[in-house]
Length: 160
Image (cartoon, rainbow, N blue to C red; front, side, top):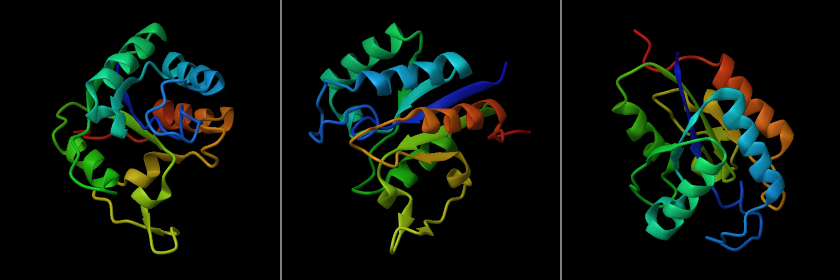
């Protein structure tokens, strides 16, 4: 079976409080994330700033395991507003073929200028990207459906 991974941001995707690192996550967003996990079998790679805090990673790990999922890694921080580079650094070292999707609420990590111009991507990352449209609502059913489609039907990375 082809491996699938979801690069997960938390603040603005699951945390809709407007306060960074708030563990009181939106239950509707959590249900949508669980639907993505169960519909795709995707593992999680944390790309959120939460990855920099051990207590938040422990919390996330327990949460994801409770959904039947698994956190298999995290991206390494390389600088402010460098999310695209952090994800691409992770992709560069993956050896086996897999499908991936990225969920984030910050367009500035993936677009420049007036946020309509796509930042350069060696890995066609934008074809795997879903941006949460309203960070006060977080991950919606429509956005979860896009992730499911990418993970189940999208292109395969590192295919021989």
